[in-house]
Structures are given as structure tokens and as C-alpha cells.
Length: 354
Image (tube, rainbow, N blue to C red):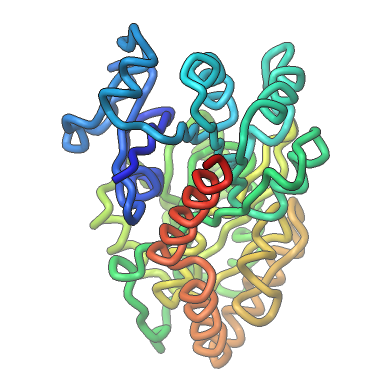
């Protein structure tokens, strides 16, 4: 069995774990830069290694039967170029969002990207939107294979949207500008005029936590708003089960940072929660407006408020949206199918070099 050496930012329970450890017919070495990036100790095993402890790259490759290098961000792809030079192995690089932009990037980033595009064999953007972005930066289109992040459908079983008298809106994501939580909160305040019993729950943590809390006070959201963080997967699932609508108000941040396609949006759709989101980045590849959910212009409080009100007013349409959303996730974002696709991309890469 061939082994892929994966370099990831950290070891934590994200979709990266499946894309590293569960690719059919391929073994793995899970590489991180230093031990301090070992965030989740239960995921530590004998296949987790540290880049800063590898002294002989050729010896490491031979000992572990490594056939392909796979960096899970563009910055990590740059780090692996010397590894590739010394070993002669093909390099694949996943492109996940900010790494396809100049948002808060160091001096010389574009020059380094062009070098990566020149020397790397494959690039796996997580949506067509990011594929177009890296082509514009200079990546040869023939090196690109779009690889969507998948959802473990067994962990997110479908349920019919419940018929109840609540109006609980949920959003999940890091507290950073591109998630658009501040726009959602302002839209929610407008919704309250018509739905005074509606609630908004945001699950996440990050640099904007203090701002989010102060904004809630400024908007006088009081007990109708909750900001939750440091939740287990089981607790998040419980919050999803209690929600009536899911909203991802994603937008391009002021520094140019963008999303790929939010995984939480896919998970909500898989479970049958009706969704409202924005025409941002790769999201329209997941949601067709008025079919799998409702899409609005990004960074627009009034449009988002109107969409939320429409959904809360037209509950009779929820099952139609939910069924279409589940079908879309099953068709294009099933983790098992996406991992098979990843294996095929590896097969192609190895076959092309034989």
C-alpha cells in the first residue's frame, strides 16, 4: 500500500482527519510542524510525526514508503518544496480559502505562490471559486482538481423539519469577520419586530468575541441572543436539533479573506435544517437559490433580514428545501465519495509519473 505524507497545520478533529487518515487504499503519515501543534491528544498515534524532527528527508521517505507529499494549505506547500526537491516526490497542495488571496499575507507571498504553482504537481481547491482564484494568481489550470470537503452522513442523519412554534436561528463558525456574524445579528434585530419570540444562537470563538458581545448589548438583543463556545460535538449536535433555521452570513472580509464552502452549512443541510446563506465564494456551488435554501447578497443586513422573515413566514416550504438540501449533500458532498475521489486523484498523479 502506498503512503501519503500529509502536512497539516495542527492535529485536531476537523475534516482534515478524514482526508488524511481515511483515504481508501492509501496509508498515511500525519505530519505537523512541531509538537505544540498537537492540539487533540486522543488523535496522537505512531503515524503522527514532526517536520522539525526529520533530519534526513530521503531516509524518512524510504523508511515510510512515501509516494506523494500532500500539503493541506498553500503555506505548507511552500514549506514542503525543499522536501520535494531533495526526494523527487510529487507534491499536491490543498487550497482552502485565505491561501488563495492576498489577505494578511507576508511580503513575497505571491512570488512564493508562483514558485509553488510552477513546482507543485497538483492543486486541490475546495471549490470552483477558489480554483478560479488560483488560476488568476498564475496556477496552470491543468494542475487543478477541485476536491470538495465531505460530510460524514452517518454522523448527520436526516430529520424532517419539525412543525413547532419556535423560531430558533443557529449559526456556527469562528468569530472572525468573514463569517458575517455581525451582519446576522443586525438582521436578527430587524426580524424581532415581527417575531418577538425568535432566538439567535451563535456557536464559536475567536478574535471578535468581545466585539460580538458588545454588539449584542448595543442591539439590545438581551435573552434572545446566546454566544456559546468550547462545546463538544455532542453539544453542538444538540443545539442543531433544537434549531429551526441555520444561517451562514459569510462575506469577504475587509482584508480580502474569503471562505471556501463552510462545512457547518453542509452539515446543517444534511440534517434537514432549512438554510439561509449568501452568494459568497463557493456557497452557490452548494446551494441553488430557492431550491436547497435561500441565498442573499453578502454583507447586506436588509436582504438577510428579509430572507429570515420569509423563511419564518413560509414554514410550509421547509420540507421541500430540506429534502433538496439533503439530496445535494448526498450527491456532491458525501465524505465517502469525496475520499474515493481523492484516492483517484492520487492514482492519477502516480500513474502520470510512472
